[in-house]
Image 1 (spheres, rainbow, N blue to C red):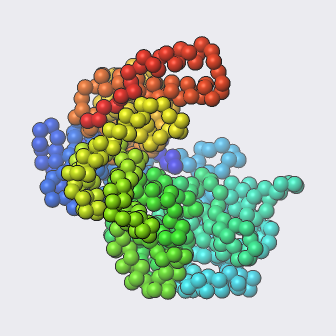
Image 2: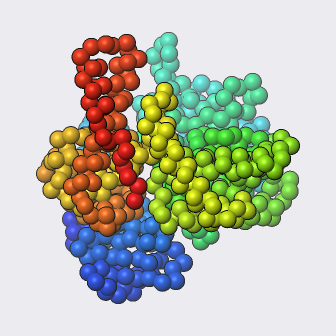
Length: 596
Ligand SMILES: [Zn+2]
C-alpha cells in the first residue's frame, strides 16, 4: 500500500501540531501540561479526550480512541492512511511527491495500477456476458435469488462463460497479457503444458470493490450443481487480502458511518439483498472468520458490529470468537441468530426487511448471547437449580480464561461484573469475588507444569509482559538497547504487540525511536489507539526499569520453558537440557506479572 515515501509522511506529521489541528475540530482547554476536550468519537458528556503537545498524541479515556495526527484525521474524516497523509500535506502546503506505485518500478514487473486496469476490464467483460444469450442461465439464477435487474447493474454482477479461455482471448484483443491475468488471479497456469486457463468458468461473478471504488478481486458462484466448490474467490494478490478486506464496504460505508453500526454476514447475496431492500450497513467476510484486521478496518467507521449467525452453523468457535472480541472491547459486539437453516438473504426475502431490521436492532451483546445459549442448553438437559451454581461457575471460568480478559483493567472488570450479575441475577459483588478467586486459581495452577499447549492464562500473562515492555520502551527509548540485548521482536507473540515491537526494533536498530515518527508509519496507521494507550498507561505506571526487567525475565522464562518442552519431546538428555532445567528451577519469574 506504499503510496508516499516514509520521510515525506514523517515530514508532514512533523509540520503539523496536534493541538492546533485538533482545535480546528474540537474546542480544547488547557489542563496541566495537556489539553482536554469533548471526544468527537463517542457521545461525550464531560471532556474525556486528552491531547498532549509534548508527545503529540491524543487519547480518549472513555472510548479508547487515540493516536497521532494521522489517526485523528483518519477517524474524523473517515479516510485511509494515504488519504490522511494527502490531506495534511495539502493543509500544510507541502507539495505531494510523485506517487511511488506505478512509476519507477522495474521493467516487466506489475504494479497495482496494472492489476486495477485488468480487473476493471474483466469486470466489464463478465458483466457484458451476463447480458449475452450464453449468460441466460446465470441471469435467471440471479433473478431467482431475488435480485432486480437494477441491482444486477448497480452491483456489477457478471457471468464467466463455460470455457477455458474466453477471458484470456478477450483480454488479449485489448492488449492485456496472460502475465497480467495471472498476477491478478484471473487466470491460472496449466499444469501439464505451458499456457494458462480462465480461473472462473460457468460462474455468476461478484466483483469485490474497495471503498475507493476499485475492483480488487472477484467471487464466483458455481452454476453447475456438480461443481465441487460452490464459491470460488480470487487468490490473494497485492490488491486482495481476505483477512483484511470485506465485501460491500464500498456500498455500505456511508450507511455504517451514519448508523455507527456495521452488520457482518457471510455471503455475497446476504449483503446485496438487504442493500437492495434498504439496509445499507451490511458487509461480508470473504470466506474467513472475522480477523483482528477486519475489526480494525471496521472500527474506523463503526462503533458497534452486529454479527449475524445462522443458529445452525454458529458453532462454538464462532460464538467464542464473538465473546473474545466483546471482551477486547475494540468495538461493541452484538450477535443476532437467525432460525436454523436460514441465511440473511432468504430471511429478509421471506419475512420482510423490517423483520431483519428488528433482529439487528434487538440483537443482544455477545456476553448475553453466549450466556443465553448456555442457559438454554442447561434447561434442555433438564437440570435443577443446584446445577445452576455450576453453570454460573463454568460461565465465569469461560470469561476469566478468555483471550482479552488479561488486558481488562479494574474499572472494566467491575462493569463486567455488574453486567454479568444483571444477566445471571447474581449480586455483582459476589461475582467480582468469584472472578478474583478464579483468576487466582488459574494463576496458581499455571505454575504446575502441564502438558497443555499454551493455555489461555499463560498467553494472557505473556501478553501482559509484552505490553509492559512496550509501555516502558515508548516512554524511555534510552532503555531500548538494554531490552534488545535480551529480546528480539520475534519474542512477541500477541499480534498487535508484535507489530509494534517490529516497528520499535527496526527504529531502534537505526538508533532513533521517536513516538511521532512511529505514529507516522503506514504499519502503525491502524494501531494509533494501541500506541497512545501504551504510552499513557506506561507513563502512569512509571517504575520503568524494574517493570522492564521483570517483563523481560518472564518472556525469557517462557522461552526457556518452551525449548525445554521441545528438547524433552525430542528425547534429548544432555547438558543443554540439564542446564535449562536448573535455570528454570531457580527462576523466580513464574509469578510474573503481578496484576495491578
Ligand atoms: Zn471518546
